[in-house]
Picture: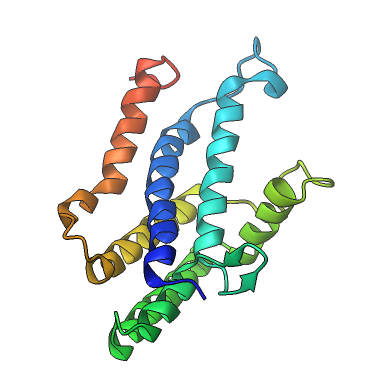
Length: 198
């Protein structure tokens, strides 16, 4: 089984990537992609938007996977990290239980707000892992607002866990407002490229 430090690096990196991809994606949702001069199949903004959505989906589904051991090692997910942290005595049973309850609440909230983690997994499998059949819309729409909220709250959960698991003395202010900073960077970037209008 992987150690806490091995797992937390992957989970934390996924959380940082989630913040970046979501922040860069959010401004593009408002952009009209019905330019008559640019067919959808060669529209670079549509392509980038799709790639960012795939990245958000990949990061979220990895973080919510069940712990497993396979040929490439242990699944680096929130649950696997909590299992290892409790096993190594890095988190008390009470604190671990609290983080697990938060994780389950986030899944329930996502579902209540119109999201579906199983559809996210199907989308990951068909579009990212085994895309022999499907390059089409998901069976259930991936609504961005619930997805953005789910991603943001997941990032906050991993940040809270990191405060207990980090032993290097990293300033936790590094994580403060990370999601909002990436959203602001996304808005500034897409405005500078002319894709997003003032």
